[in-house]
Length: 357
Image 1 (tube, rainbow, N blue to C red):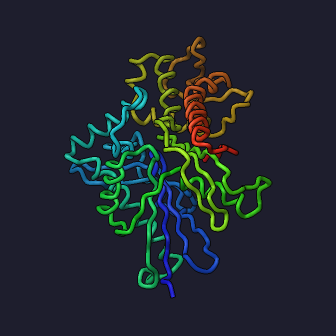
Image 2 (image 1 turned 30 degrees about the vertical axis):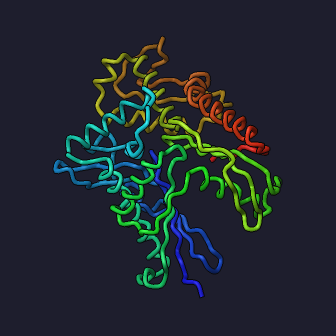
Image 3 (image 1 turned 45 degrees about the vertical axis):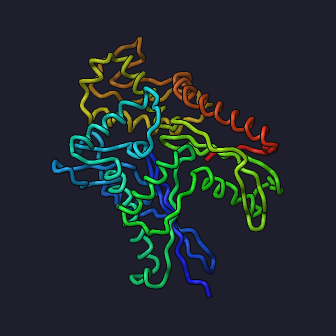
């Protein structure tokens, strides 16, 4: 009789991360880890946790995730996932990455150290979630395997580095790496396979999966080789770029810097900047492209400037202004999707749909 096994999936993201697990028997229910440590809202469940780390003056990690307060805590590390792979970064992405690299250097810490510090906390919280549901002796009853997602565009060297990071963080030796679009494809087509969607799948259908995250956008084209069991095969190699939602934040930051002046912006405290981006994050998530109303983002301490649409220490963002911020990123993503479709056609794969995750 095959051993009972708990399969854990960890989605390590640039800005947010998540985890889930399921038992390979019975109902095979997927459990989302939603009880991440959160001192501000201890009774609120969140399926994702911020990819943030904070260090003390001895270079030791002391806070992570929701416990980190950007703008208040010192030595805050962000976007460190992007340091695992050596890529040519867009100018809008260089500054935060350089800040993270400089912080690590000042503490004599490496990018492997930082990433394993964070992944270790993710793993410990996931194991605690399993313990709550399955009891204290769960690890004596079940075998455990872990699937860790990685960007499709990562090199073999970056993937090997990720395996090393997983080992240092205490993940099982059988941890497997799966391209983010492949994991997204299996999730996206779950409703189609269950018959709850009006769309139908057929053998040999091809589709493009676009996994748009906080830091990277990854795409792969797949062809269905079997429906039962569901098996897919790559039509084309993975492509992608650094066109995640954080690039929209960078575009917004550049716009604000221009409107209030670089000197004024640079003098703002980290806490005030953090408040601005908390406001903008809510606006960004609610914007659907068809809004006709203006959105307000607080700019504490900034004088009125009607020409720059700044009034009562806030900026009034018109739908046109927001679309401009989004277009800079979305146009790049559309270009990647178009290229994937063309590449799939060149391989005689008939693309039936594009799925965005």
